[in-house]
Amino acid sequence: MKTVYIGCCGFPVARRKYYELFKVVELQNTFYELPSSEWAKNIREEAPSDFEFTVKAWQVITHPHTSPTWRKMKKKPPGNLENYGYLKPTRENIEAFEKTLEVSRILNSRIIVLQTPSSMPSTSETLVNIDRFFDEVRTLINRELIGWEIRGPLLNTQQLKKILEKHDVVHVVDVFRTKPLHKGSKNVFYIRLHGVGPGEVNYSYNYTDEDLEKLYSILLEEEFGESYVMFNNVKMLNNALRLKEIASRREAMKIL
Image 1 (tube, one colour):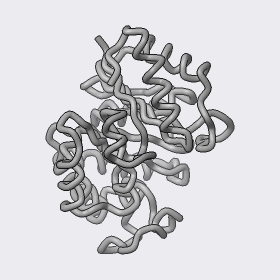
Image 2 (cartoon, rainbow, N blue to C red):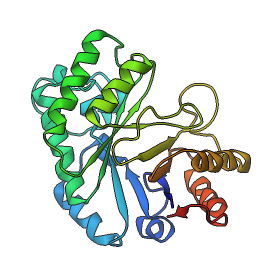
Image 3 (cartoon, rainbow, N blue to C red):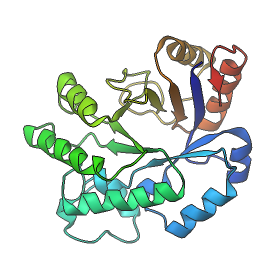
């Protein structure tokens, strides 16, 4: 039977309350400012033993230092700032990934999500950089899965599919907009939901029952072993709980 984990990108309510409602969360603070090992240890200890954390990778790996999101960092990373972002295979990016990996292992996380911005250049140089970056990263991971959410028109479908398959990277998607090109060797279907409407994100959107029924149908139709359905909108708490309600009463999949 398929297993579906439903949760939110970040905590929309107090953590202890959230643990009572869901079995998984995608941490967002790990993107903006990589937390300390002590923080990771504390949050792992406070959560139930069967609760899962997925980790959104530190932004310095995916976003250049000119990105507005860098302004939220109190302490800039070391080295040449020009060498950060866009999955460049630089010492700075690889070391930043190692630090993200350290935090994820304390949390006992199995999935690290890279989210590249729409400003990432769609060039042959970018393709070479991505390929080399994932070559480096593969030597660092053990049981962890790497997910990649691609914003903007980066490369073409065949190029992306080739990269994802070569490096066994899970293609993270919003299924209301596109289907994944690769679910990885573990057959993981990872969904991030940013609202329906024009553009790539519409965070203020409130998913209707019709939307959630459509999402449930997609989950029924897609082939996977495990799926993560992570809401990333203002109404994510209510939307995630409603999807759990709809899916749980059908008993066609294991809903967590």
